Length: 379
Ligand code: SF4
Image (cartoon, rainbow, N blue to C red; front, side):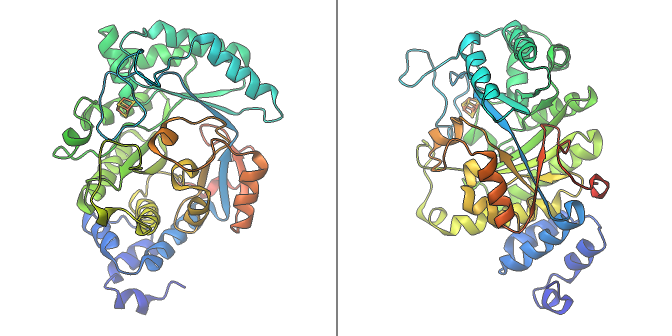
């Protein structure tokens, strides 16, 4: 399938050689891949890398998401999830007891959770002690649980509220049981575009700095890119290069998640040429280019909530190796207009993976394999 003459005809000889010999792609290479007319050729290169790293394994996690509040002091233009005040229609803040009740219910079902994923808006009043107490309480309930919680944006917000450094916040949360952080809030780093879509959010340097601080404490993190809105290919490649550079320095990114922008319920409206079925191909291409550019990040996730299960399965052939998990209850993507279900069973996930031609591997939050898998192949 990887025919040198074919890639030469596409003008991709240099990229082809680099990919097959495991050398790093440049910023210009990334742009060429986004502009290549043959998406299947780009996908085949990404599939080659994905198989080199993970063979035929495709990962999933038995997890539950908890979105503790959608009240948020930021007013990101694209966000359909946030509310400004408790009195706004649809606003919610879960009490500690409500969160524990959800966890108890999930954990007592046949699922047996491996990961608890906690994220929310930047609430103007909840103090850090509330979150420390929450972490300790959920771990009292199930000490085996890996708690993945709080994006760098939430950490920056906690630091503002408490008047201490983000490093201090991370140390306190680690002491309370935090082992992993999700990668949300990265959006697009470009300094001309970021103020247009999320003017009050932690800036790119802060997001990257806090990720590096977490890594320095041994807290692994994920990373993301929100794409398919106002950004161009150059801004996507720039974003990927900045993540790669940060990973060279701090090494703690475990998984990259390309997040397609969902326009349906957003105040950010797109021109017609950015909408329509071609978005699916753009999403597959973005998965593939991400796999090829991020040579130092082990995993690429096809987040089925945002892509939809069918495209997520296809993305396993375009460089992705992880589908996320059972999730059970998701709000952020669904309030943005995601048409997927709110949760999947283990059987659903395993069937999705097997019917796509891959070997299902159950993992925990930090990608420890809970099933057979050859970890030696990872970078
Ligand atoms: S994207 Fe996050 S930080 Fe921005 S408004 Fe929504 S909840 Fe708040």
